[in-house]
Structure formats: C-alpha cells, structure tokens
Image (cartoon, rainbow, N blue to C red; front, side):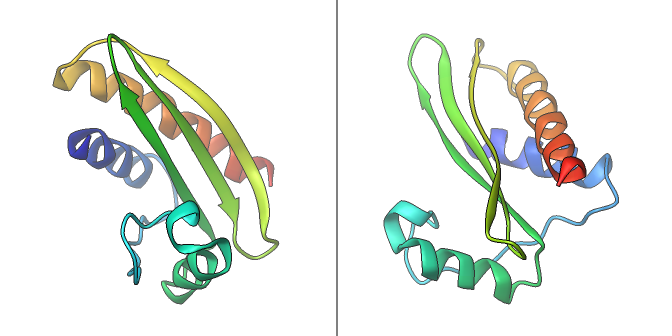
Length: 111
C-alpha cells in the first residue's frame, strides 16, 4: 500500500504543474471518516494545498479502491471513482498509480 501511495505521488509530481504537499493530521488515518470532514479540510488547507486527494484500497484477489479529489477552495468533490486492478508487484502498482494520477489530473483541470 505504501508503495502504491508513493507511486501516485511520484506520478502526480512528475506529470503536472502542481506540487504534492503532505499535511499533518491530529488523528490517523488522515481521512475524513476518521477525523471528521471539517478537521480534515482544515488540516489540508493549513498545508497550502488547493486540492486534496484521498481514498483507500482493499486487497483481495484483485485490488479494489476508491479515489476522491476535493477542491479545498470551493469545498467541492471533483472526483469520486472506484478503481480496480490486478497484480501484486511494483509494475502492477505503477500502472494503477499512473491510471489514478491521470484521473486526478483530469479532475483538477476540469474544475
């Protein structure tokens, strides 16, 4: 999972004008469901970010997950998309991360 997240960060940083910024959360996991939406948005804003990308993956025989992109300025959900991919090696995670990165960039452009 950590490798997938790192691949998504690398993909977004390398192929867009945007920078990927970390942000500090008072509770982990750093997700709206675990810390509340208002606190999650406030933590993301403190980083100086315009958008926040979050989601999760459930690994079984194939990986299933959800990717969401939130426009922090307008507090508008730009993307909520289910994803699914197969493979349990670096190449599979790279391909999935490239796919997710493309979706995220497209959502941010269409804002």
